Length: 178
Image 1 (cartoon, rainbow, N blue to C red):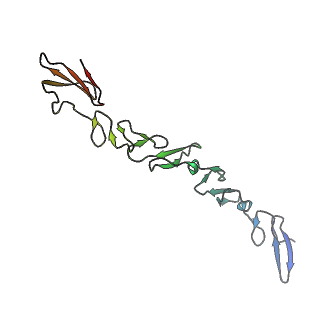
Image 2 (image 1 turned 180 degrees about the horizontal axis):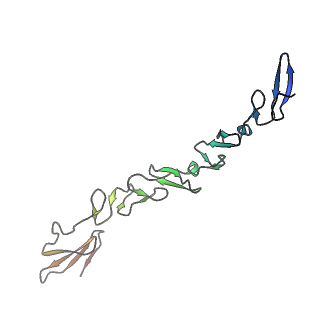
């Protein structure tokens, strides 16, 4: 009788025997099925046996998928402005986690209320740490001969005494005389 299981080949030895196991079987008598011997995990993924017919792959950070067959999209992506790339697990796409006042898929745009190469300046008409406070253009009163009225976000209007012309001033250095 053959002591080797799963079609293993038995070789008689002195007071002993040795089993030569078929592919995917291991153990002294070929009693264990090792699905990982087929190397189902690609791209240097590590095969982890969960049962005799089920395995999982522990993929390197550059790959994902049931057998590590898909390349992580962040491998070829550099997010701008020190952003951190993350794989969107529901798709084959990526997104960047942006720092500071940067936004956008690649962190290369400023939040709406910010401007400048480092997104660290408020757009015209706003102030504050988060650039969320409106600048009151009329404090202190910029009008020499009259009083100041706000005219939009970044404009003010000097309402002058009779006989003196009216001037509308814009923060973006556009001056109009009426």
